[in-house]
Length: 121
Image (tube, rainbow, N blue to C red; front, side, top):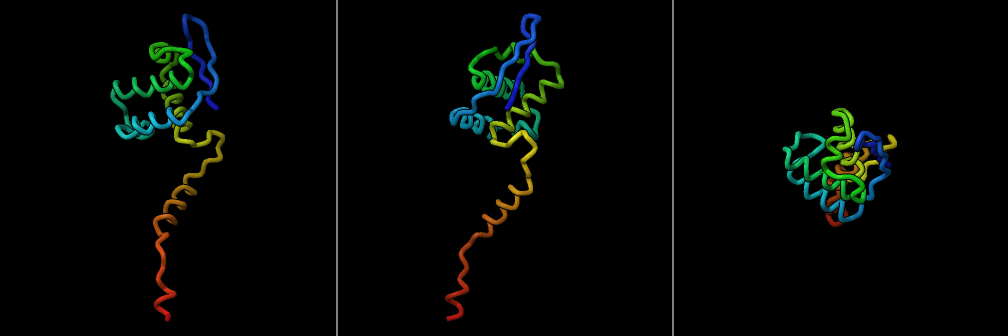
């Protein structure tokens, strides 16, 4: 769950949980092909594209400019990261264990059929 509090026209406005649809996920993956927002510094154009996606996921309750102007620097980066994690399906409740993902990927890579039965014949 992601709550977003933006300062708009001198007032704090609270927006609740974005809707991460399949289309939002698809658009996020397309953006991520160009830059990994969690590991790299995006260009201004790439940043604008991510924020536009955030605006869309919050049903356009605010504009890109209101997002930029409505958060202080620290919260700005925190909310970008939070959105990216949600878009990637990573839970924000602390239950995510990256080691489990690595182990699953390793076991999938080693999942080649063995030919030991026919060798014994």
